[in-house]
Length: 102
Image (cartoon, rainbow, N blue to C red; front, side):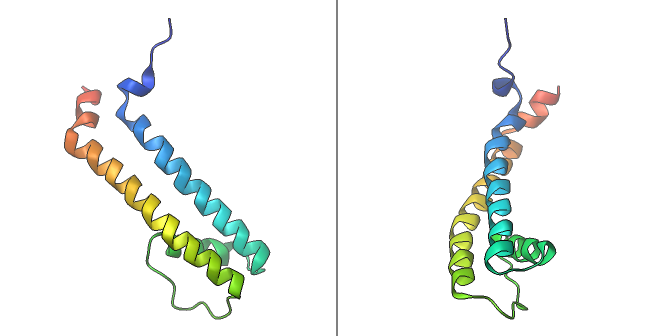
């Protein structure tokens, strides 16, 4: 009989938020690459700074569609980042990780 490892290991509770965050990051990067015609590194830089709420100050040329994408990423990203951080803090405060390691 198979064991339900997701119920026992508390780290599995972080897989979904991290997967959603990573998916949004990749979609954002490739959208900037194709719409703005930026390099992969510039697109990744803008996507990460937008998702974390830092916001770059050196974005020189961004099109109307790029601005719309950035607004959507800010709204979605901050919610997803906040949710991911809250799940991690929840695991730490509940002590599930320490109990699992014993």
